[in-house]
Image 1 (cartoon, rainbow, N blue to C red):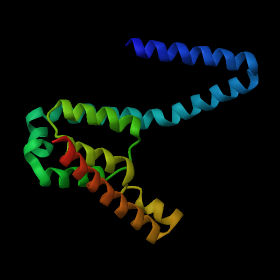
Image 2 (cartoon, rainbow, N blue to C red; image 1 turned 60 degrees about the horizontal axis):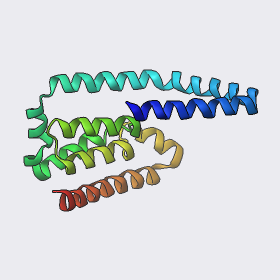
Image 3 (spheres, rainbow, N blue to C red; image 1 turned 90 degrees about the vertical axis):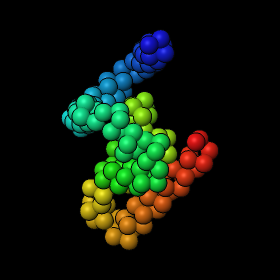
Length: 160
């Protein structure tokens, strides 16, 4: 709570300094950031709704059985598959990871889930193929999955 107030105070001070230095640029930056916020808000609300519904339906014991300490390698595979479906920004993934750990999920499973959520995107694969080409899109997604699994293995060895 206090750190949030400190950060808002610092941001307000810098905004004031920016406004004093150049009113036009500051207004332009604020308008652009407002537009970006409006574009992200529907996705953010949908994801928050999804997370809220998922956590209300998935009990801590169910989360533990799927990706908990006892789920082992199968839990890592489940997390990899779930995380590979859609690309989600880190500002949503990190709180989700914390919530899952608090509800009984194991660190390696959450690590691979978070990593694949941010780096692998099967939903966006078609668009990525059109922009970057088929071979690049597949190579990037496959290497991201491999690196995520390697990351989970390191977490498993070091943290558990």
